[in-house]
Length: 251
Image 1 (cartoon, one colour):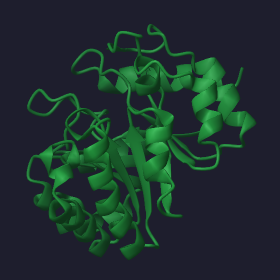
Image 2 (cartoon, helix red, strand yellow):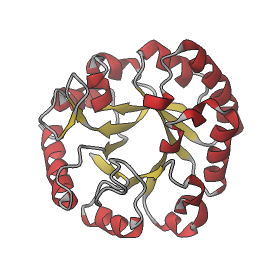
Image 3 (cartoon, helix red, strand yellow):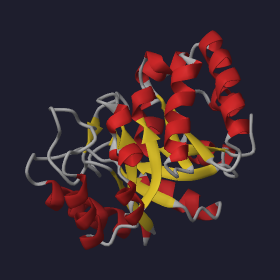
């Protein structure tokens, strides 16, 4: 099981945000190593995105970055083709070749007109950067996500276990529907009424999820993006979650 972690989860919250780029990112990298994780999914957020070290500090190449999550696009920027292309091209010039693009909340693509506009934008970008992989994390009907994912050969799906639960989708059906294009899994536990909780206290059936992913031959990364737990106890929280996921995976 290739376990990684969403950047910032091993450190206290920044500016009271659940998910934000950490100032002390280099220290977190040493903790990633200490826990035996395969790496981090690097974050670019709305807070000074173009000052992110992935764009300004070549030393990030020394660290195990498995993908770059463009959280800054969870905003109205998703509707501006220039903004989408600018952040992707900036990361690309810095050497990034694996992107996660969240289509959630402010960047939701549930509206058909918005989705069509985004399809036009992202198809052009996908073809321009055809040696990069773009993986879409979304709370959408499967057919609507398919409209995006099957535009280009280098498009994939980031399957978020918690989002799938709270959106009311069947995990087995979802995994089999996107079996050929899932390249990234976010591990999160949610209740059916959209509350993110520490695993295994929610409604997400990880045992069934792991069994189904094994059945399709999935051998990619599992990125821990779980509820934070007590501030100041991040290392203990994540250590417990690592043990839990390994136990459930090996059943």
